[in-house]
Image (cartoon, rainbow, N blue to C red; front, side, top):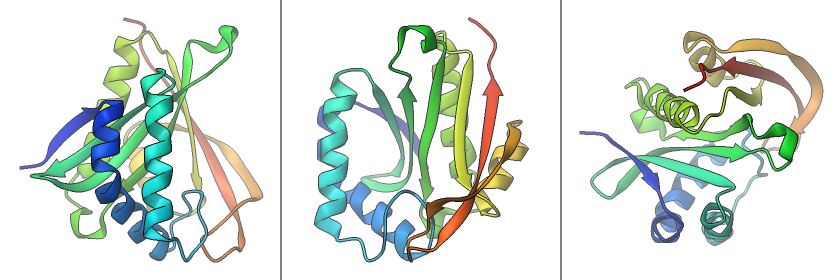
Length: 174
């Protein structure tokens, strides 16, 4: 049974190695999640551990999908830092292991973030993803609105510049 867990800063450190495995796998498969290949597993674990400080400070919330101790997926909610933007946040780092895809794990993680954001008074979510990626299907089916695409916005893991598509979703105020 897949369980969705909103992880605390100490738990993020505890899961860092397992989350690093997911991040390395995601990059090796060619997904554009901010890293270039090859991604060293220890560097990936260090990146997750560094997020613990942001989590503890309330700037980032992270969820994992797990079966037992095995992390199947992750997603993050990054709060806007400026006073005039407290109503919005960014959804980031939605990743699902290839062995768990097609089982609704990504959609369940996305639903968890949206519900939490709404409960926190966040009324606008934004995200970006590589144009043409499978993630676009998840976002469209979940009711996200496509804003547009920017050519050459980010490099994929091989270093090639790729277009990025931006989305938003308005949430009901609590």
